Length: 435
Ligand SMILES: *Cc1c(COP(=O)(O)O)cnc(C)c1O
Image (cartoon, rainbow, N blue to C red):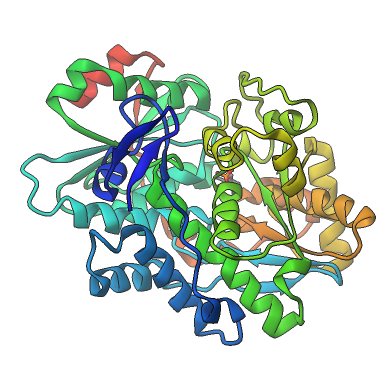
């Protein structure tokens, strides 16, 4: 499989290059030149064991020319070593719980897969690979854990000071080893911009092997398509629903999950419809309504992992629809909710259904609920992107009772934070990276 840059269709590279570079040298995002359809027998979803088979088939379709199937099988198995159950919230809404991995958010899927694929591609390299990541909260923990202790790879995380939860911060500032955390006095957009600037900086490029691990890396997107199939298998076998009756709602910031869902659909998963739910950072819902894509400074909200003012995967979404707004509207509906609506939803869903949403899931829940009111033929699948304990202050304020913190998070809380403070300019970042 070859991959092209969204900035230049003629710039074709192999999977190894796409994965180790992350961002294309022309600033574009890598896309596969084709999206192979899965075989019909895999798409019947009659057995739970189909999930691993489907995941392996997808991995082979994109990476199989460069990674032997036994190795891919190990990578897929290690990536999916935790549950992702589909559970009922109410008669119309099912929650796909993507938070049972080591850092309690869906980003574990992408990070675990990417770390293993990269480490495989780096075998025999003579230089260390420097991975730069901007995080608005959850990416940091997932990437740090995914790469922790992986030989030949050094990870530098940039995060906005005071704008991630303490739990999130503890997950990526306490690890040590090959993981360095930089506390940037700025916003997430500053962090993301710094990473982008570093990638095009001639001096850094000539001295270091740089790569990214954000949702822009194609190897993070591939495993995110797996769980749309898992939802389809469980919806059929547990809830008697065909995938065409399902509407998937992704609480979104950089739009990795939605893009992965669109890829899954093009692989043959006949999803009924998508909902792109955001907080006040509603650039994509606004695009769907007006046709204007206007990135702007991000706004801080209680669903902080979605505080993104310039969603990077939009370039891929745009590409998948060939820039055709009408076609995008036919598959995706956008919606947005503010913080007080979000908190009310956490309170109400806990009271009515005894289900504890995290603030990101709550945004998605509201969008689904509204959509289903006028589209009652569908059943909603909410991608519940994080465990509520990651946002314990907000959630406890809403539900007025205690949220149990899983053991692995409790352990991170008691460790010492180690972060280097920098201001949001490339010069400071360069000095740290080059020393
Ligand atoms: C990263 C993150 C999101 C946004 O993910 P995208 O699919 O890339 O937009 C949503 N919720 C949580 C909890 C996250 O960590």
